[in-house]
Image 1 (spheres, rainbow, N blue to C red):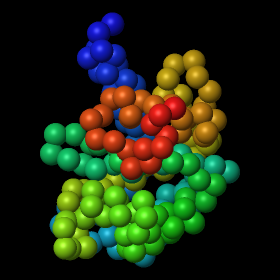
Image 2 (image 1 turned 180 degrees about the vertical axis):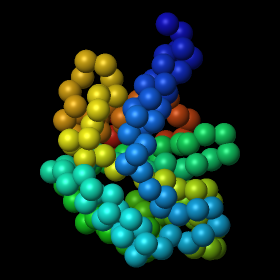
Image 3 (image 1 turned 90 degrees about the horizontal axis):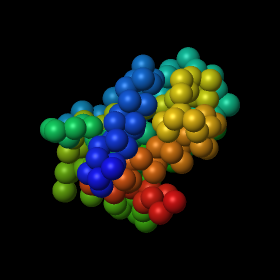
Image 4 (image 1 turned 30 degrees about the vertical axis):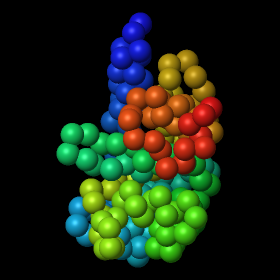
Amino acid sequence: MTAEGNTLRKRMLFESWVTAHRAHSLTLAQQGEPIDRRTVLARLTSLAGRQRAAEYVYILSERRPQEDTPAYIGKAKSPMTRWSQHLAGLTKGEGSYARWRSRFLREGHETVRFDLALLVVGQDNVQFPPLPDFPTTIGAVEYQLVGLAADAYPLRLLNHEGQAR
């Protein structure tokens, strides 16, 4: 298989998994709007509350004009706690969150450049692994999704340390 064919196959696997789990997504913010922490956490509480899982995998995506682009993939036992931390970090813009601000927010503003979507899937709702015949534990699914996204999309994930796996 050519390198281009392999990239397309990985993108198809990633997008197939995301599409199959789309019922577990929410809008973080729409283009031109600020990210409202209270609204995001209320939506996330509702979404995670309907799933009531012990562990979750999540994908933060930018809805760019040509495609949805994964920006961050992670896992958490409590998505509300983890995303409260992410949103606080984004507000401060320090450390690794400086990259988040420059990627998501318009320069000099607190409004987002593109629509931002968050997919949050609890362990019991994982329908299949991103890679055929691989495990479906949250840790394994996160690992597979990071690898696929790193190989299939030109923009680096914000949690780029996972891309060297």
